[in-house]
Image (cartoon, rainbow, N blue to C red; front, side):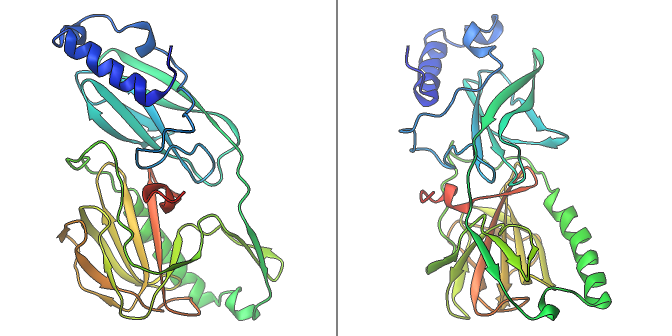
Length: 299
């Protein structure tokens, strides 16, 4: 029996269509009630985001059929679920701090709640040790107070969860700006011997004023000028999928604006704590930053 989750998905669709939807009112078959998510096949790279079950990665978990969209949670945070009554898929963001080994989500359907397990593999990210001026590492009391206020505000933005946008089953994104990827997701920096949080996005080198475009349809949910991030815009793509754009020189949108894929809404800059112009692009799922490369076919 083929174990590829994508092939199984197609078989399920064919099976359910052959029954004319009767299976929706019957007991679920054994394969739909399992509690351990199948491991992804190495050749299954046609879907975005790619399934990469590592810290900072994404797990695509097959949920099987259900007449209504299942509610999936990791801890107390809701997870993006896409599909239809024939086949639902949970798109789970895995934190960079996740422990290697078994992880689980809860799945609530019309038939009750169950736990679905999946396995997180290890991944070693690059480490960079830098010697810099102490003032760039240790904040003054005034700067630290500003940072804490801005952190609290952005945590509220990160908690945004709206209805998933109508879309196809995959989430392939357009790269928001052309340029060289100057710093990769997950890079672990140590300044003057002091570890800092791993790099939570993708840096793309581009000249000041280069237009930035929306990678997917989205709604502007935050515009601000922040201590570390400089000019910043957050977009909501539905279902807890958010994207962040930092160090901007110009913002050409406002909160509430609806953007289409490829629509220009801001420009590259060097604002905030940076050494040169570039775009810091972040992608968030269920309140955790994940590797943007998984959404553009370059993981």
